[in-house]
Length: 379
Image (cartoon, rainbow, N blue to C red; front, side, top):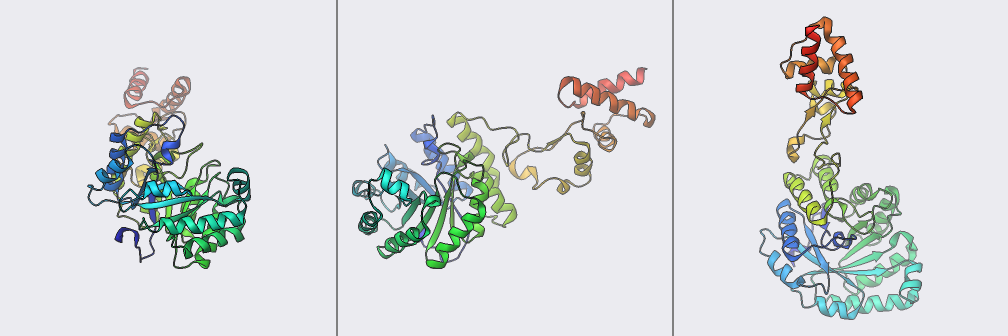
């Protein structure tokens, strides 16, 4: 129970790689992989892990196995607003129930075939039932971005009176922008100041990470993330991006940042994904630099053009010379690589570097620069 009682307002992450992430087309995580992902998440310091959907095979075994990690995060499971789902979840010991309830008119009438009043009564009844079996019942506002605010407040009021402890805003189609997210969070925080608020945002327009950060800065207690942002369609907010932002920009330095690349590459491998080389936070070539202005600046002081030290994430800084290079960068790298070039031939060498790099369509390495330099000095 104590894992779900938070008296100090802080920013917390709930990882849903094993639920939302596993919904990505073609992604299948066997038991041993799911357990290994949770092990990484526990070591990183993630506060809560959504283990999956109620009814999934071996969910109880996964829960009991992962409880052995020290310290274990809080665990929760996702379930529909159905009595049979609650009864299945009741067999899982001390686990949070994340009840998903559609709140937009479209979802209520077209999908559930209900009217709002009937849904309110059903929600009240089933939330009350869920609280008998779970230390933390979360009301998940599915499709909140297309719902009437008055109905959102109404169903939250009913659910909290029935015993729910947390509200989770779900931007199911990724329609919101950061200012709209802040507005919704503030709306709920003002109406229910003693209640924890979470945010689950999709990435259909590339705003998931920005919206997750906006939710936290707007007063949300929790945001949902997944490794590499895995999830339905374009996915959700990326664990590595949100966590790195909190670590470097909000001083949340209790997380073990250095484990992010290992976890990201492990999940990518298991999910059949390829991590782009310049992907934020974990891309292998993120700190590779060719531009003359930036190379010159980075040689003088890395913080001029780096948002954080690459070594904290096990990444490497690499400088290259090419069509974008300038004299200052050329001098600095020749000195670093211990290559001598007379000042009068520096301009000629730079022109040759730019010409050759343009022909090859890539920057040049130290050995190629040495070869060009040797050729020039023989003339």
